[in-house]
Image (tube, rainbow, N blue to C red):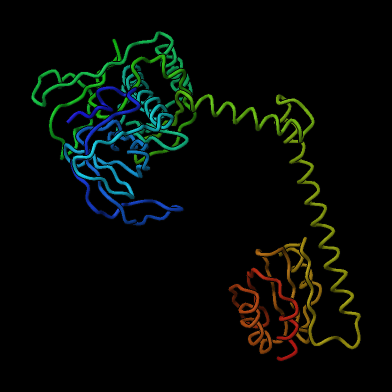
Length: 401
């Protein structure tokens, strides 16, 4: 069946009839976790809400004001998932989330255009594609693509957009010989009925079930953003189309304005100023490490000169790292004093316990239990990563052991 959304991708409202309404478990993703919620499967005589397919996600919208959570295709039927039931035979009004639809149309038609241009220019076939929430990509059957090739492809796709070439959808019976002329990655196993072919005038024919623009000018612009490794022998070409290009530009301008305010200079100077700040930071970090090493040596020397020496010493430096601890232990390696040296800040603390092997073996695991972490030890040294700085409880452990 060809749905109303496929006959007219710009149709935003439809009055139709409920054919079926059944209780069901609705598959959803909540905070990144898949779960099933109680709801209903609603089937209508026709729909303007596109069910996921052809790499395109499902549409969202409402049925009589009730939110549609998901739409999937089951054979020739579009199954709408809602939390509420309807009466079979009931007349309902379906409203489309147009912003989502337009975005999907721009990305999907953009993918068709990029696929056609790259196949024509370089002979690289598109093996798959993904319409992401922010960025989409094509997976190309080539292990590499040059920067010049990407730049040329971007130039050509935007040239076609400026030419405002028509995009038409032709519908054929499944045995029509015209289908042999169309590009395809194969029909779904459960496909039944008519076959749609999306035509970009003078450029390509591609079998597709998705919703598309009616003219390339509606894409506005395409930006090929970057290339990543794909599956073995393939690459991923990321892209933005239509409103996503404008949205990304707005994001960049807002970020540039914020950086200009922080750096007190214009955008063209941001890289130079950032490099200068990074170099200054490296020098400052190196100087701080040198100072902390000197402090560690001074603290160790101070302990050496203490008489009588304490049974244990706890030393914590939030600004230090393991280099501080190692410097201290190089200067003071007397097992008669149990040393607990802690560096870093919660929840990323590091500690070293050093001293009499028997006391170290007894105290180390207790420290991990209290401070929330894991560690290991051998002989006179126990090392751990912990998350909580509980000095009162730590002191109590030393008193009790």
